Image 1 (cartoon, rainbow, N blue to C red):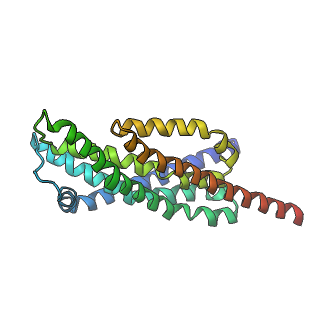
Image 2: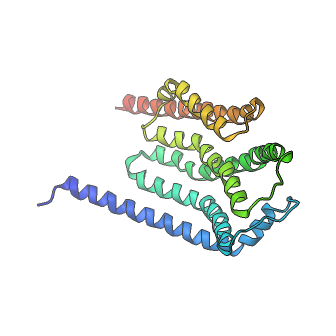
Image 3: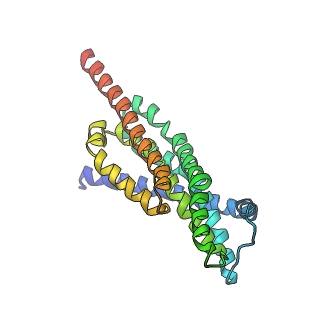
Length: 245
């Protein structure tokens, strides 16, 4: 006779596999749909450029289009992935927590798009302008499409993920994995890591560093504030439940 715990584990693994497959299908469908409009996306992204981007081989065109479609697919798939995560943990949380964590799903999309917008409209032109000035005196600048969009994605997608911090913290606090005390104790280490991230991806001047560091610090503090609000609500609900008993 099989151990009930083993059967339970197998059931959880099967459900996890099913939800991962659904997320993957959503990504592939989104990528295929984005690929239909990828030339329009490309034209919009290079609309302000004074020169055409260069390709060094036929495969570069396909690579650039696939990369752009992939980023769009990630943005579209994120709420699907968040929903699948929510459904997976739903049986383990209370009814009140279920309603609150459901807000996690639209929040993920909004924060990702905000982070992408910050990277594209603020960080990317700032860093690209610095690089152009650096090269202007000694080099003739000619960008390949592959290098240009790789650089753009490195300046945008990581910030889309970093801006997910408040939503992830809220979700993990609801599950009891994080609490504001732990986040406050880890503040110095978190700030140190965020400073390293900011200094690594920005030009070597203090203004650029500050422009990136300040929003990252604010995101961390907002995450702590959200965690405090969620944690207090949980303690209040536990106190009410204990009083009713």
